[in-house]
Image (cartoon, rainbow, N blue to C red; front, side):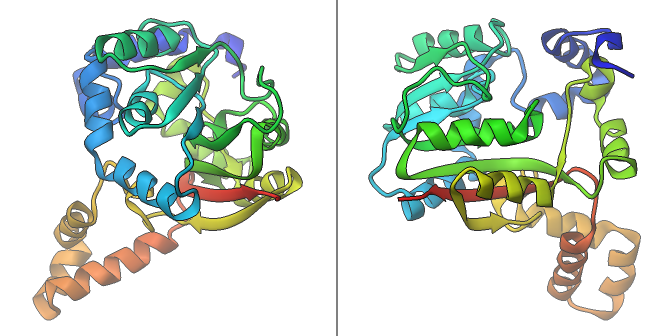
Length: 282
């Protein structure tokens, strides 16, 4: 099905999912409820963002000039501004609920500052070498042209600057694996905008852009890729599976959880999440 054949825009798709009782957990966990400020506050207080700050403290200490792309409904723009960063948010969607309008509302409501720009990641309207950090949450896999987007990210980063790309969907091929992933996404069935790339294509596009991968976080390696789960909730879910209950008769719960996590990390689920820390050449 071509994108033109899908019935809804992204904003309309979210409205449909918000109204469906079967998808309330998905909407809440995606920070897409109607309470824009609460979404942002919840993200800023969560384990995922705490881990993001820890990584930036490790790889970009004292760096504060940050590009957030895509800005979406403002959860990261809010969180970074609240944490003292000088933030520019980029998003091509003007929506008051899931785009630039939502970001403006949140920032005004919370008396925070950010530069909010209408642009696509493949064509950023900025001079070369002006950002210390480019933060991308679930954005690379939406690229219409992945190499072009990474070239633009590299261009606007200062030498030695850091790209932190979080929660990017990975598939094994562009036939069965990608099709299985897309079929599992309720929002994709409505608006057709989901996508994923192979791990090799992410790596190649990053390295071709004069960026060096410093850290690659695999599925379940970090709170960033685990969300909305935590290590504790994952262990509980593992122990409650049929194999987990059977093994629990024979083995300590901690060992059952460790075996389950070992299996989870090795499952090649279509759309599994990876995160990348990369640095622009000095």
